[in-house]
Length: 226
Image 1 (cartoon, rainbow, N blue to C red):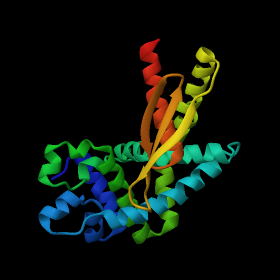
Image 2: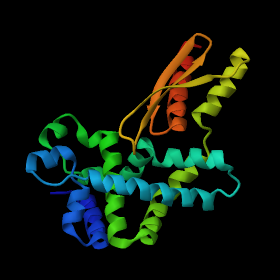
Image 3: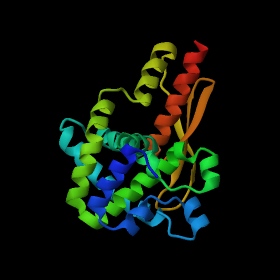
Image 4: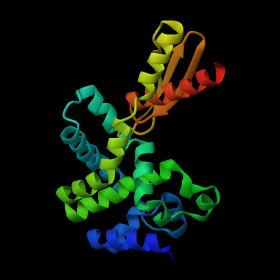
């Protein structure tokens, strides 16, 4: 069913969770559940999201002792947003384990960041239920520590955009939240950033991420224009 690397990961997860039904549920996307009349991973995803928030907050707080609240929030946001979870899932080979419906497989579901990130959260929820917070936190720190180090060494898009804007136009970017959608426990924000007559819009799971994503798009636009 799986390649060797996937079999190893499944065995490791089984040894932690020790409940095949719970593990299978954590790996089951709603498209597969609909086809096979079984439970999907959305409830576990909800729980895992909260566990991740606390565990990664702890990691950032302990590891980056010179960061103020704003920088800690930005770091945590980058680690637990869709892109961060996608990278973390990829590091451990999780995408190959996700159970997808036939239609979702045909449309490239195994490469979709949203599906992979949601499944990662569900697996975290299952680990937490089986092993408790301390062990879950230790596992998460092992996965996210190198990602945190890499992110900390890079300037965020908002900083780079501001530096470029001041250099070229002697002004700073203007940000505005133009929409909020999604469930109450997991809203998606849309931000617009504008410099002179140029602007871009992007979404994210919080205001900071939305603004950073919009800044990244505008940076690309400016680089193509100059």
